[in-house]
Length: 292
Ligand SMILES: Nc1ncnc2c1ncn2[C@@H]1O[C@H](COP(=O)(O)OP(=O)(O)OP(=O)(O)O)[C@@H](O)[C@H]1O
Ligand SMILES: [Mg+2]
Image (cartoon, rainbow, N blue to C red):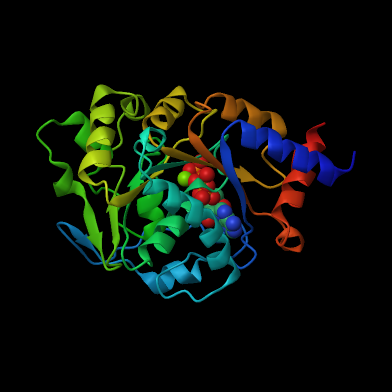
């Protein structure tokens, strides 16, 4: 069987298991790995509003509301479309479907890169508001990536302190439709908090109170911590980032096995080589069948 035939077979198999989509975020238009690893900068920020340095983000290879119709923009649109369609469908199968978890099997596969780009892309839509939550609380990097001060209170503080109101922690930004919830203070049990009752309540509150918003959770890797799978059980949609030529087939399968297969799950192939970008199914097959 050819690689492509195997790929198509694999896709069918995945589809039957509830996987919605395989998309390709090649990164062909963005800097080499490592270059896009921003350092904190002190952007202007007041109590509940931060000013993102959009030129800096663009220089680092991220989408911004000003980005034109480049390749990355198009690729993220492919990822975004089905997520938005699912997010606003009604029916039992679409519970909390405005809550989208971005995860991967292992660290470093592009979760934050994908979360930030997806949030920016959704924020560009005139009638959509997006909240980007840094739920990778043990290795938070949304604030660093966006150039925010590192010590802003956020998710961990909220989960530890009953007296805090969520609305006091949400940061408005100079991207009109984009809000950010930083990870908050570092805490020895921060990851465990993701499976706490407080987190369950928060997620439920978010899905009800912010039903008209898309909420993106930049999350820990599924194979690194059991709490990631708990978080996955709370949200309506899960996007698993697969790093081209790095994430092994077994790792993808092991990570997928931790997810409730009735959930809406999407796979995003990150850092695919440009030569393959017009044919992501073929590319996925090339990747997937290499483990046979
Ligand atoms: N498509 C891409 N093109 C270029 N660089 C990328 C791409 N995807 C990710 N990167 C870069 O690779 C590095 C790792 O990506 P990222 O931080 O998004 O991974 P992660 O899964 O969030 O990692 P961690 O598990 O440590 O949180 C970063 O420097 C990021 O900017
Ligand atoms: Mg990250």
